[in-house]
Image (cartoon, rainbow, N blue to C red; front, side, top):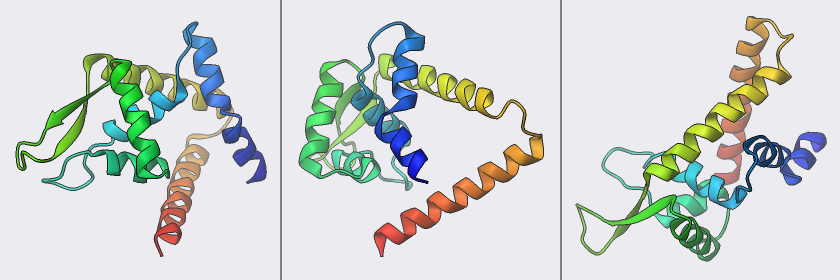
Length: 143
């Protein structure tokens, strides 16, 4: 677990993405795009800066700055809510959707390389157990 944490702290995947794309990618933008792409979470809701903050595990003021940066970079739009004109929600632009697609493809290829010698059952078991672990981690952080 310590090695995983350290790897994530160094943003190994992000550095590899930047290298493989052969252009700089602001990893904070990737985090915001991932959070917005996840969608509202519940029917009838919209993705807000608060949802981005929660998904990234940061305070709302920092999320607001990151969202503003992602908007400036052309990945995200602020859109007036159709259900409450006082509220603003977030949507991905075409460029944001393209970044999300590229990141998904890169992650899948990366994990495929890491598990190339695993059986299909081992991959299935790992995915199931990792999902169970992250769900428990999320539950523990909200109690």
